[in-house]
Length: 239
Image (tube, rainbow, N blue to C red):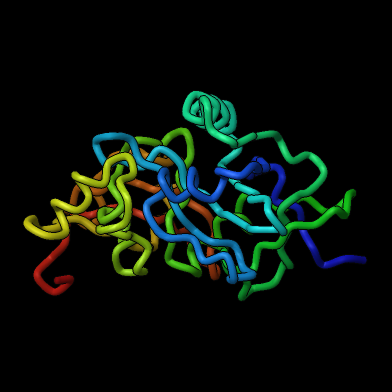
């Protein structure tokens, strides 16, 4: 029996193709895409105010780009792209022939997600899916958290996943201004929750350890503990 688990319940997959596909992708996303990297490339698309609309995983296969977005944002993402490829040599379509998969082990991370043509795989549950991001210390934007956070508030700068000087992309001015002349006061961290926090929802604003925070994931059982990603104010020790 295959140890691969399908992530199709959590991710929608699209194929971006055409002569202008690479340029279009670079003009929309917050970082540079390395065509030679075989693992999924993590990036994001922001609104003009610098807040993340979509987290993306990107694979290049031959001349095509496969883009994975959260299932809850599938329709919004398709509409967003279709409205912006007018008169460009770019086509977007749902990639039903492939699905994102990962091995169900205790050490797999986001970069271990692969694409396969194999069907009839075990469906990954919510715990397996979110654990991939917890281990990588990366956020994943859903409908609940879309337009809630700028990239620095999710610590993407700490992963060198923000390009400040490449060609203009949505929200770049806000993001670059914070980097060059501002001070980032928030960051993403993983916290252990009390048992009475099981009903917390993704994007909910709560008080934890006397500090106001906002969730950036649902609470899940991770390494035997109830955990969630939160965005909180930085302390002096975090700087």
